[in-house]
Image (cartoon, rainbow, N blue to C red; front, side, top):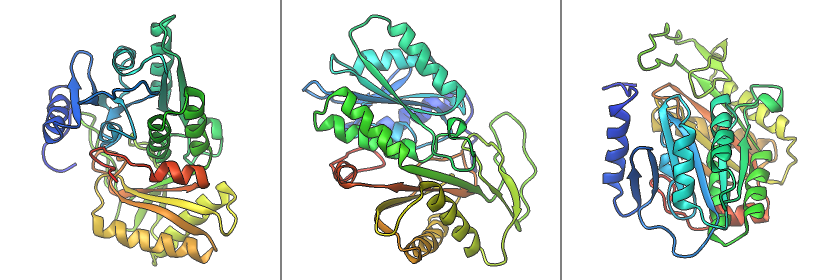
Amino acid sequence: MSGVALAPGRSITASLEGMVLAYPDLLQFHRDPDYVAWAVPPTEEKVAVISGSGSGHEPLPVGYVGPGMLDAACPGRVFTSPSPVQLVAATRAVAQEAGAVYVVKNYAGGVMTAEMALDLLGDEAIPVRTVLVNDDVAIPDPARRRGLGAAVLASKIAGAAAQAGLPLDQVADLAERMVQNTRSLGVATDACTLARAGIREPLPPDQVEWGVGIHGEPGQVRPLPKDPVLLLEEMAEALRADLELRPGEPLLLMLSSLGGTPQAELYWAFRHLHRTLQAMGLSIARHLVGTFITCLGRGGWIATLARMDGQLLELWDAPVHTPVLHW
């Protein structure tokens, strides 16, 4: 990341304080333990949707707090899960008898945090369902797949379902359906420099890393094809094949920068992904192009493809008002 490095401690707090200053009518930042929630809580009882994540993946999760999406988000230190105490405090603050859904990416720390939070909540009258996000096709075993772009999609679907007044089990089931129908793949064009953890040798300009994670996990180093479009075609095929898509199914395509790729390059990549999927007979019904889930300032992108149905499309299109998504 260029400029001042985001390091554990005060700089993360200052960043969150700055975000809340930028959206004072939308967000509030609670300290000790830290979490971000709606500035004006909902007046009616509804299922709360809560997520936590290490810092360094912005705008995930704090940028998705607001009506129609997350009720609260718990930020940890850089690439480190928040504490169970944070998750418990956020749950007690925003959840009511209708209960809460935790959107949890499939990383050991995040899963452990959610489990410990449930233990700490104990017999309190707040029912909680956990939705595990595991959409990374770079890992063959589905049980070990990391959570990537589906974390954004599941949070939107859960938030819309909760906003519509659906009960806890339906909200969680819809979010799980979104995860089950979503696949992602990350490709990096440079190495990730972790705050206070040394510097990796940069990737040569003629190489990429295929199948990277969002914590600096390395992928398979590959030569960049002479025609880079071939890389995007391979990404599209990997996503299509894992989802076992059929022509005509409505799809959602999200292309997110890993944090260091300019918008012009993202549009170039999106153009070729979109054309490749269309040439396969697939229908892109909805799309997002921008910075939605990142790895500090790493170059490259995450492509996320999701099979949609009528109900998921309706929930996706439902009004949302967060710093990142708003329609």
